[in-house]
Image 1 (cartoon, rainbow, N blue to C red):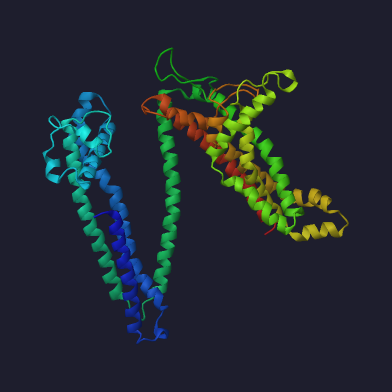
Image 2 (cartoon, rainbow, N blue to C red):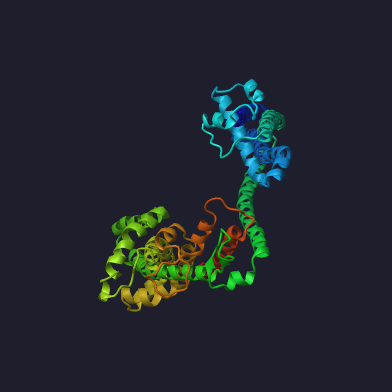
Length: 493
């Protein structure tokens, strides 16, 4: 049974449970809701939750565990093939799953019947052409062991799906029956439902925390594997970035310092652009603009935050870069050839600064508006002008929060990828010239993992070391910024 239909059945049982639970509660109270401990709807919600939540939880757990069990069982059928070919078992298992999915599609579309699938022979039938006809392209011919493993994979999946449907529906019916029998006028349905909602909220928060933990652990384990293959001292203090995937011309040089320099240099230019413009815009909108102007200008300014970064990258590549070459290129500004190509630190920095303007402006505007009105009134009452009040009272009071906003914008700039990939170039170098092409940590993470990656080589694993280094830097900036903002907010609470 498809998962969508199974979910709809569980939800339908939940609706039925809601109606039955509410009716049973009212019947036990003699039709008078004032005799109930809780509102009638709470009894319905209790039965509905007891019907749907355990069943949904079992479905999610089944969907997570079943592939692991099937992969573990089927991988034994192709382990000898992996040993003979010297190939990765994971790679062969991906072929097995793809062949199994192709056979499923062939059966669903009527190209093959189940009997014909069981009769397929990899030595006599062209499985590759057959699957290509239903939209599944394979890179190589299907071996007999791969075909048999795919058949076993399909059979185990079919059995697992059948039992999944049986157990999920049985769990939903059991929850409906038990909770319905427990329903009476003295049952504390409101307390049970509120505890259930609290458990759901805790579960949602746990998912976010566990996801973050999983990301961090995956980075740490792969980084440890990288440092087992490549010296940490050369990675952190090396002045050259020159990965060699072919192995020719010596070993790879994977020093992070040129990438860190490019990252910080581009981020610095972006902040030089974004901070003054964003801060001045925030001061105007919060202190000088009329309500009609603010109601129009603020949403228009924040539209910039909704533009995808790939669009900013194209803007840098096609517009800002050629414009800078025209101004600072050959026979440009002061007759000096400052810039030879459109991809440069300045190109990416300017466009990234434009992207950060609404970020700085919105945060600074909220922080300035949080300054108590009494401070403004006191300053004006002592004879200060409006501009003097802004300079000498409001901005000093809001400064810690503004600094926090700037640090958050800096962490956003450090983690940017697409603008850098399209606007800054790919050269890893240590240079002070902002009109030269450079690259960043995020851009190299993308390039190291693009295409077929051998995750047993340091050239691929270095992406995880770059990632955790960037994670630590941005995490430190975020913690520092949040500390400053929190300290500022406590000042007026």
